[in-house]
Image 1 (cartoon, helix red, strand yellow):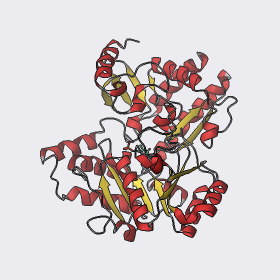
Image 2 (cartoon, helix red, strand yellow):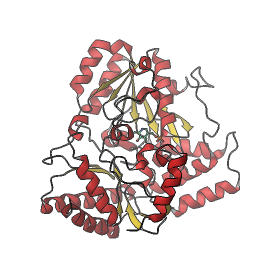
Image 3 (cartoon, protein in one colour):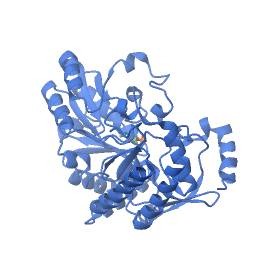
Image 4 (cartoon, helix red, strand yellow):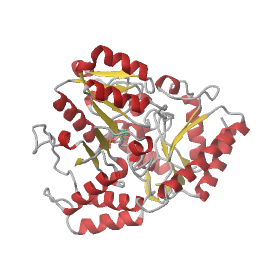
Length: 429
Ligand SMILES: *Cc1c(COP(=O)(O)O)cnc(C)c1O
């Protein structure tokens, strides 16, 4: 495979940008080698600058639920751009997107649009702290809630891949306000609440974890967190930046029947443009400026292009059968991967919820349900698998600890191409 142009671009990039990238997980540190540069994407396929083509399972890390350059989104963005790229003042699209979100996610009674998931989670925590007049937050080991200071404690994903459990630059005094518990361990959360319940402003959780690879909540876990928050007067925040409108029409909260106090959103609601949102109970959201005293603002919040993309994406997701198709394609793919692994005699376990999935190379195919069990996975073996697939024209997330995504542009052709590549790759491990 010729990747000369990518190599040359990466050399230039490294001289100018930290690690040659604008976000750490892009740098291939989790799998070795050098990142590819892409020139275009169409549907489920990506084309790199040397002209190699790949079936894409990164989907820009989650937003591209319709694949690349989905015509309704491209048209909506183009039309919006012709009418002005930013007003810094209210415009109709903001209302439409807010209505779409709130209608599909009834717990989101009021919403504030922002420009990234990180902004959304950072603001949600500030709101929880301001509303409860408490400072401590509880998160789960391996969960990622964006790059905000309070969250860079056992934070999964990029941080996990790079082996930085905490980041320098986060004040120790602030990190001490972030408690962590193992995902899926309700007993541990009960013990923490028994000891410090009166100090805890919020529990924040990825309802389906995507940032330690995919972890599935055990029956009763999310319900238990909801009940503990209610009992102790803490705000329950579902971080649905990845799962929102991805794992069901109304997000993970619909899929698992959980009503959080606050929800954070991003990725799919922007259809590939920079959008985030946080929202929830009306009286909580009314504490946000200018209605209330808790400050949060953004020059490009509710940007017309981003909002137009989000509206086009959510409207298209409203068409009948969209989630059934995602489920079916993803099931065929993941069942196929498991079958190929079995016939190759390679131990592997696949976690999947809807169109989010991770194949973990645990030593004997043991199940993965929390940080510790995920860490059993053989990352060197994953790296070899990743590169073998790349050679065969399949682009997975470049880390064992990431979710892969199926889009509505993926179909039988892409699944067949992928499974043929998986068969070859597993025999080369
Ligand atoms: C991606 C992600 C974020 C951060 O969103 P950005 O837009 O990258 O800032 C937060 N929480 C979860 C669960 C995510 O998957």
